[in-house]
Length: 262
Image (cartoon, rainbow, N blue to C red; front, side, top):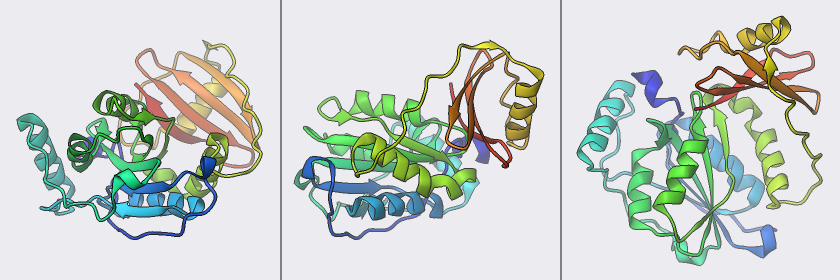
C-alpha cells in the first residue's frame, strides 16, 4: 500500500517568503504547497528560489504522523468518508497574488488530502494556478484535471511533475519549465513532436526495461513506441495499451523512467 500512496511522492512543510523578482508580466507569485516528507518541500523551495516568489506551507491541524501505512489508512478513510483534514489558516492572503504555484505529493492518483481541503475553501477566482507535484510513477495529468473541475473560477495552467527517484534532475527541469512557460527569461529550444507510434523494436524494448524494471510496481510491456530528440539524448513514448510511459535516454547515462500517464 505504501507504493499506492507514493504513486506520488510526499513532502514536508515550511513557510516563509522571498523577495519577488521578475515574473511573467510582473505578476505577484506565491508558491503554496503541502508536503509530508522532504521531497515536495525541496521542489517547492526550488520553485521559490528560481521565481523569487513568496512561499507558504499548507499545514494540517492534525498532522499525519509520517508513517506510510498509517498515512495510507487515514487518507483512505478520509476519502471513503468524505471527511478531509482541517488545515491551519494561511498566513498570506491568496487574493494578494496573481499566480499561485500549487504544490503537493500525489496520493491515490490526485493531490494530497490537505490540498483537497484547501481547494474546498479557496476558489482562487481570477488566479492563474500552476500545479507542481512529486510522485512515484505519475499523477500530474489527473491532478490537473481534478483541479480544473474543483476550481472553475481559476485558470489552471500547464504544470510540472517529477518522480521522487529523479529529484536530482528537478532543478534543471524546473528552470526549463519556467522558461518554456514564460515565468523567467531565457531561450529554450523547441521540442520536436514524437514520431509516430510503431511496433516496439528490440533496441527500444531494451531501453524500456533498463529504465523501468527497477520500479517496484508492474508497468506492463509496451507494444508500440515513438521517440524524439532532446538535448543530449532521446525521449521515448511507450504505449502498453492501458498506459503511456515516458523514458529519457541521455548520452552516456542510464535510461530513466520519468512518468506514467494512465
